[in-house]
Image 1 (spheres, helix red, strand yellow):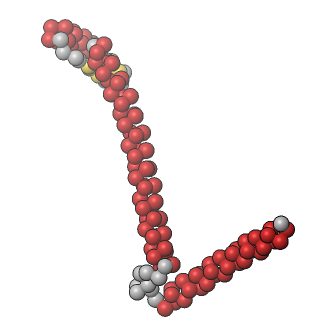
Image 2 (cartoon, helix red, strand yellow):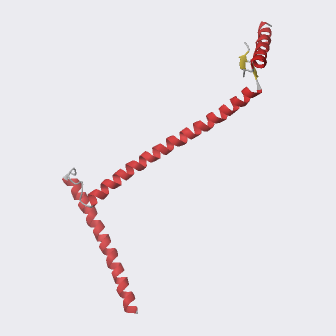
Image 3 (tube, one colour):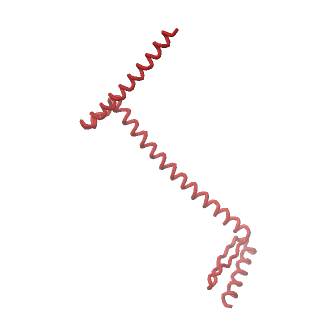
Length: 134
């Protein structure tokens, strides 16, 4: 009985404050039994709903931005690695490499050169055949 009377008095005061002062009021009251009682002016509910919608969108956008930053960081690292590899392929930045790494790089470059020669020879043969066919 006491809770009901005090709740009614509180709701009455909230309504008066809202009307007399043009204030936006919202009350959330839980009874001793755990039942929810609430009061809110229409504008307050609209603002609350807009805020909730914005908060959800903000959270999603924040997660998207975090994912994009992570992807951008991975791509930056990949670019650095590719630039380092390119420099080594043209003979720059070799001072920091060990003998073993230099041997490995040499093998890779020899393999690449063989593939290039093979492709070049194949294209040359095709060109010779096409010229003979004319």
